[in-house]
Length: 439
Ligand SMILES: [Zn+2]
Image (cartoon, rainbow, N blue to C red):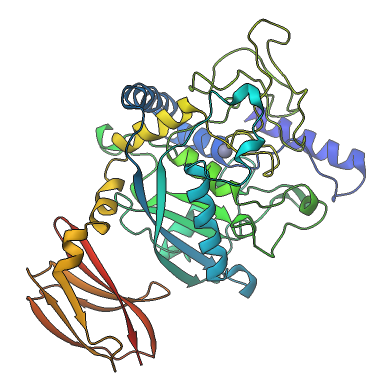
């Protein structure tokens, strides 16, 4: 606690030294990972040790298998908004999904910007993301972190607290997009958190009552100004010229969600940002060892915080999605980072792949017929075998119809507005979907 108070006092001194509140106070954690992990460790001692263990196991497993199969993860995006500008247009959400798919397949248009010295260590993660639905919730609440806690922002994941409950976190990556309020002290802005995610902790093996965080809090939270690269919203000046969204904040946070740590392992001095070249690494063997992040530094080819001039030492890799460099600098994951993420998808987050496999089940898709299309709202869902459930959603992800005991031949009359709807038939083996038009 003494250290925290000292840190806050120093923030204040720095601010007053500049004589105005609009100066950037450096450093602040633009990602809430370190704050969240430290907070969980204080609530549940042993948490850090557990997530490191999961990372190590995932790395070993991922290295043994080394790719070959494309993993597909289904995504639910929750847009929790108070002001109209926070209710992001579908086009921004689809744009962000495309960026995730480009970056995790190394199909990003700027992939070649990686310096030649890293050509051998960067790769295609062979992970793809499929948008399952968008859930929009208008709220009266605000979600505000402190310098040492993100618990209040986690309320965005709870309907009872003005947020939106997670959809089946075992089978879906839930992403909440919300206005994350600045970290302040009185009227002073200390900084902004652009996003955060909890790493996998392999919770089922934990003793009862010790699950940190609870499964309903699993997923990724992104500030509404850092979703997509076609987003008109920005931070206020002077932050707006330094933090420009290229859609890499969600890529970084999904990296954490799949087990990755920051490339400098959060070793730098939390007060001054000074590099620390001692101590632990990020757990990925091929990321160059470095002692601080590249926040506010641009893409500086001379940056090399640790082991300078020693044989074989590489400069700091600000091209890496797990740095804090400007988003335009971030273009790659390394092969060992990829091994960790794939190991996580084969281990503690393996259930994420189950529904994704189901949705692409071509056999199931052929077994369900929905007609007529277009219709006046009365349709027939005919199936070779009766599904477990039939659900119909509108294009905003709102459930408009459910049948928990369908037969092989179901006539359904929808009392809905004109538009496009998604019919979802769920089987044990997976899901079949059809789009229908109501005229
Ligand atoms: Zn981070």
